[in-house]
Amino acid sequence: MYLKNIELTSYRNYDQLSLDFSQRLNVFLGENAQGKTNLLESIYMLALARSHRTTNDKELIEWSKEFSRIEGRVVKQHSEVDLTMIISNKGKKTKINHLEQQRLSDYIGQLNVILFAPEDLTLVKGSPQNRRKFLDMEIGQINPQYLHYLSTYQSVLKQRNQYLKKIGQMKTKDLIYLDVLSEQLAQAGSHVLFYRLHFIKKLEKWANEIHKKISYSKENLTIAYKSYQKLTSEQSAQELNLLLYTDLKKNEAKDLHQQSTSIGPHRDDLLFFVNEKNVQTYGSQGQQRTTALSLKLAEIELINEEIGEYPILLLDDVLSELDDERQVQLLELIEMKLQTFLTTTSLNHLENKLKIKPEVYQITQGSVERDGD
Image (tube, rainbow, N blue to C red; front, top):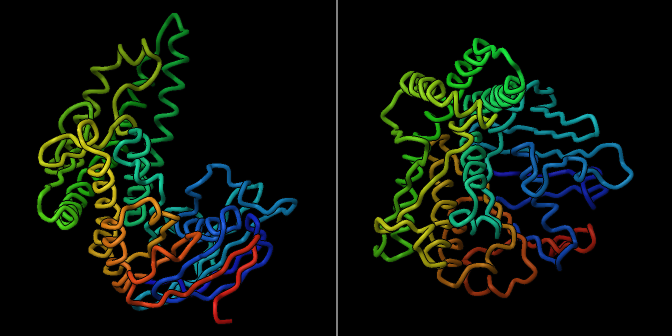
């Protein structure tokens, strides 16, 4: 899989832009605040219908313009697909081969991308919210059903929390409607849990192999899913449904008192262990970064295993954050048949480390020139 070209209209600081890309390594070179990350972000946006930098889509529209458009052609093993993303004040529209898609879950997955940015190095040490977002984004790319259940879960969770606040002010409490919401929440939540547990099992297999390679077989990496009680990938969705509903009922008095839902996938987390030691709590910064790098590289192998094609790799100024040893691990991956987009302010750290010649795009104040043109 690779992105053949992209066209931007009124996207951030790009008024009009049309670029063709190499199937291997593409480098966006320039000083800070010139538009390198904006260009990388547009590829991420084309793939996942959301930015990795902002939750306000209006920020993506060029100043004084009414809409922004991203178009690109994706080449796969057996087909080519034209993707279109239109962003306006009214919302987003997505198209596959010029046909508008009614649901984002039908659109996402046409272009698979893995983004590695400096903030991903804090994935291990950062907040549980960041790790849940990591799970949701990566599972959603390869499993549209997951996005459906996650969206349903988030919608019912909002309704349940609103009702818990409302019922707390009532003299006579209607617990029948609360029970209906608990049933619906357990139904959607059990599928979210089921897909997460299976994803983590596969991710751990790849991440441990890569971690061993980086650590020269000195370290083993394991991943655990942290929930309100012990869950395993051996449990069926039906078993998880019954378990979650039963526990929601057990926690009903607590939820009524706190006026919020105290258990469920929205509160869960990931734990990482290196040689059976919790790396989040006791690991060195080097171990934490190696774990984060292993996770990102494992995603690439997992997606290839699931869909039969490698995803596109987006590296947003991340090499400068890694030491030489970890840079080599990433650059070895680039040598594979994997289209890569890399933003950087300098090519110095790439010299003498790459066997392939990159396609270099010089970016200055939203203007892009390809070396050699």
